[in-house]
Amino acid sequence: MSGSLTKKFGKLQKRFSGNEMQLYVFAAFMTILFFTGGSSRDDVQSLVFLRPLAILFGAYALTRMDREAWRGRTFPLIIALALAGLMVLQLIPLPPQIWTALSGRQIFADIADLAGISQPWRPLTLSPSRTLNSLFSLAIPITAMMLYLNLDGPRRKQAVAVLIVLACISALWAAFQLTGSPRGPLYIYNITNNGSAVGLFANRNHQAVLLAAAIVMLGWYAASHPVAAKLASLKFYAGISAIFVLVPLVFVTGSRSGLLLMAPALVAAIILVYFGRYTAESQLSATTQSSSRRRHRKKRFNSRQIILFSSITLVIILAALSIYFSRSLAFDRLFGRADVEELRGQLVPILTRMISDYFPWGSGFGSFEHVYRIYEPQEFLTPNYLNQAHNDWLQFPIEGGLLAILIAAAALIWGGKQLFVLARNWKYTHYTKYAAVMAAIVMLLFLVGSIVDYPLRVPSLIALFAVMACIFSDSMQAVQRNAIKAQS
Image (tube, rainbow, N blue to C red):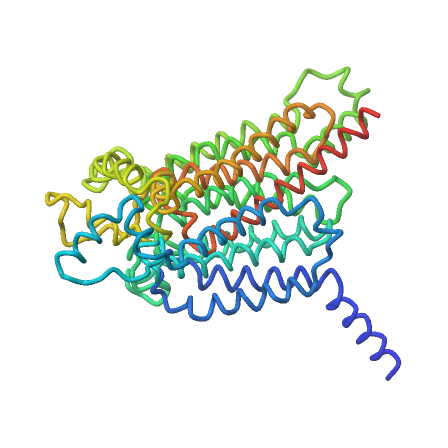
């Protein structure tokens, strides 16, 4: 008896000390992150616990680091570390002669002269506390990437399953929110879109972007398993079913950007299912087994065509039902013109002027809310205030200046180069290329959503984006390896 218990304990200890443990740690961190990091505000109380935990998880990841396993996979991590280095530079105090000569600082020098105050040493950023907050916020995506890099090959695919499960939990959470009070306990954050299906987030737009990304991930994951794999059929049909559950939830979030992103996400999901390994291998197997019988029968739709046409039909039905039952707030808002949309359009000239005024040094990460008040026109003054530009493509260069633009350009050039390599080697690879396509589309959804919002300022979403960047990098390495083998 004691020998049996010892044997079982040994197996359990081996399981929790090996590669399985790395997956459990990754899943635990991402779960904590999704339940405590769904708001972009820096005054959310849960950040007091989340950020120290992120640093502890990051320290653990470093202790488990395998340099050989990380080799050639760290470019997304380097980009994040480069941004952290830029924020550190923005926090270094500068002498008054240098600081006052920087672009955009003259107004502060004039105020000090009028008040008869001597200029102190100041950091480059115009809001040191907000820049320090931005620096600490990078601990979350950096930790998520390091935990992912510690996963071995089989567990990397399971990491995507973890992200899908968390997205589905947020979707179910949103569904329960609609059945309860608009100010009930299911709304995690004090400042939120009460009455909307925000899920584990404070903002309905961020929930909608996550659901759109989840649709793409589900499309890939459902059909990525070989036919003979364990539970392949269950995973396939469960994934397809989950997509049809998420579609109406995007409609009821009330997010116009989410509704617009859902269309390409659905197209991508259908394509990934249609060309996925499970579907293609199932079709090949069916063709081989019944080729003799099919010669004597009329031509029928094959399984891949059935999936394609039924998917399109069901999506149209779900969208029509959502609109018919007046639950599609996003659809109503899409064709209605709100004052906030007019304001965002009027902000563009102001934002471009801010880029010019603070170029090339930037105003400092996190400083937008304070700096914008210098430029805010009198006719824009309302009881509400603008804490973000609602356009990260413009806010990023305002706060980061030329160096931030160069870092972003390096990331975009790297991504474009990888896509070129993918296109060049497309015919030489089989199913590994679709993982790269999935990750690229998910990242693209976030980048497109950043044109009218700021999803990448939400801790959980930027961590998901960072992990997708690592998945894209790993998948591209696999694509190139397979291409070399195919051509040799």
